[in-house]
Image 1 (cartoon, rainbow, N blue to C red):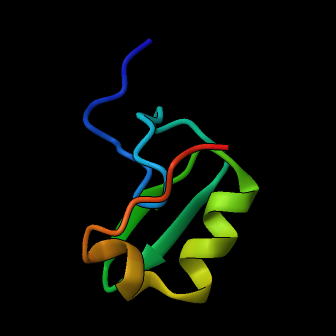
Image 2 (cartoon, rainbow, N blue to C red; image 1 turned 135 degrees about the vertical axis):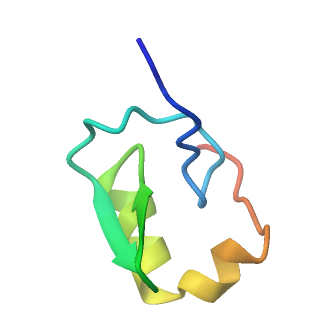
Image 3 (tube, one colour; image 1 turned 180 degrees about the vertical axis):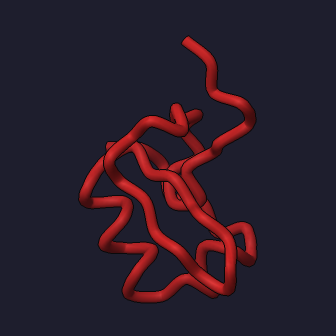
Length: 57
């Protein structure tokens, strides 16, 4: 499994670039481990890009 450095900005989990959970923000694609993490990011991208990683539940 190759992750190529794709870290979910919400929970910090390593994610494959083939995941179906992606968002485009300011010209960059962000990858997520789940729909839940994607929704959290989409609602407030700046929060998660500032390094506020939430522990996985």
